[in-house]
Length: 246
Ligand code: ZN
Ligand code: FE
Image 1 (cartoon, rainbow, N blue to C red):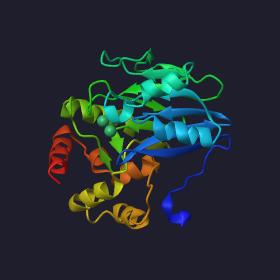
Image 2: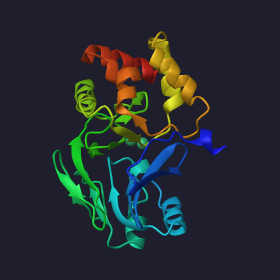
Image 3: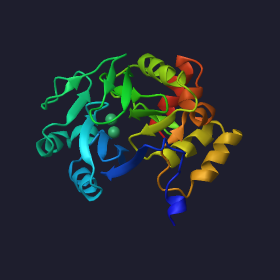
């Protein structure tokens, strides 16, 4: 039944947030305000075009967290179908579409909506990675996952540790929307390090039959995510290396 399909959290009445699935385990998040929509990290265009058409949503903006194809592969096609769409992303010479470059501390407003985000730079998974945050929620791409964090393809352990520290300092009530469904495997890994952690065991039991485990809440990440619980860079590095081999 639908009850177990998705973890539900209270939402601001004017805003509806839902995922469109892409590839094997990607989520393309849609923020819907009335008939206008904002999407984050469209790796594919087709499922987005179909879903927005079916729901009668106008695509107002595309937010990009980082350069990887599973987050950007649909952008060109979406611009073709929606020539007026606002596109935001990190500085990157590899992008061939037109977009607005955003940096740490920038605040962006989405036309036709009351939605505003500020930008935080979070190098680590890639060097260009950025995340988008407002007072209630964070769209964090492949930097932070539910009970996990992104692999270090480009950045150093120090960079990723500092990027995650920025996220840890946000309001603990912040809802965390990441770009992949890796939660169960991440919790299984976390249990190998921290099997006495009651909140972690509770999280596993609560989510083991849930298909869509996102969003989570920063508070529960602070309590159960081994990468946010690491107190030093050395500890973080050790956990990241173990996870790479898990
Ligand atoms: Zn990535
Ligand atoms: Fe990804």
